[in-house]
Length: 159
Image (tube, rainbow, N blue to C red; front, side, top):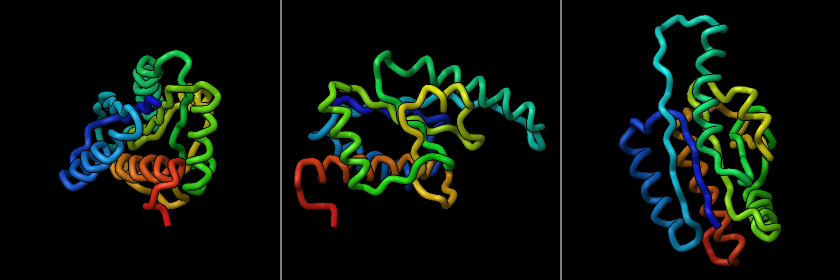
């Protein structure tokens, strides 16, 4: 299975980059993982809501261009569906069994994802009702994908 994570903006915190690298390494035996970083739009402080929507739209265009045709798309969205680790594992397994070999997880920038990306998603997923930085979500997501792969193979890790 090929899993692509598309994320807006670079991971700036060293400790997060190290954690992400660790889970990328752990995932190598299970999936072909590709991490695509989309440039975030520069913006001044005190930006208007209309300009925020414009920025989300520009970032969304670049995200949509990076999604391969036929991929199952999971948009990370605070208003999305909450799944347990077991439910995520089941969803990944179901997609794989049904022939969806390419799964794309999309993480927006600090302004979130535009409606164009959310409407393209097969699943809108919420990591938690709590708020995390979009950079931190990358690490949490990779850990959950790793956990899902371990669950699906019946290997110890998930308890």
